[in-house]
Amino acid sequence: MDFYDYFLHSIDEAELKTLADDFANPGEAFDYIGKIPETYDADGVPLTYQPGYFANLRLARELEPGELSTYLIAPPETPFRVFA
Image 1 (cartoon, rainbow, N blue to C red):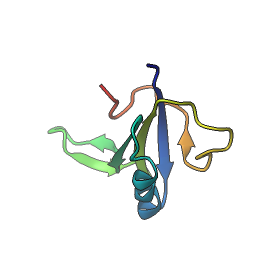
Image 2 (cartoon, rainbow, N blue to C red):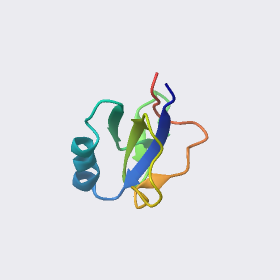
Image 3 (cartoon, one colour):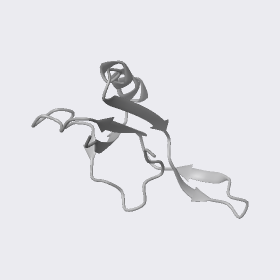
């Protein structure tokens, strides 16, 4: 079975979290990440964070044109977290 991974972003945390309920069916996996650190101190403790909130979505189907278009971002060069 093929899976399609999508990277999501929103400035509104509650709005992004509501998508988890929309994608809780078989063949769907929603992974809420939240804030992603941007800079760290010498001990690896986050100092600053990227703006907004992030999530990953894995589907057993491709998204329909326009579906989730307000949340989709380009795949990061180095994702913070991915599906195994």
